[in-house]
Image (cartoon, rainbow, N blue to C red):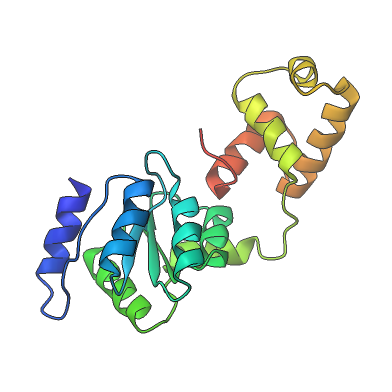
Length: 193
């Protein structure tokens, strides 16, 4: 339904042509190779290949590809990852139709487009220390309901090691407990459930 709405919006623009669509990350990569569109709208949450991985694959093969990410996630971490991977825009699905058209036009001209609410989130955390892969892994386990002891057993480390990683993650996220750490990590796009 979302793709149909976007297609309708684009077809109504006199200066745009709707080239095609894809239902999965793999299909998006194949369609890009085949159609070579001027601009791609790419959802991050797709079956088989995550949108960020599809973006990287397309940009590796076609460094000049102009890609606008379209997503429900406004967190700074995911936005930064997409922009660092080569996306020219990062647009929320809740954005207005005019923002969608503006983002496509900006990308076509080789310019970046980031809506104010995402830009503010990025700016708020600019310079923040990133969580290590191990800290993210531990937070994922916590989100799944595991205790420190269960996480330690799962990862083959001591309880103290888990506590040390949690203390570091809490400091980086500026939180004081497990629930707040999970909520913050989810809202910033560090990981998704």
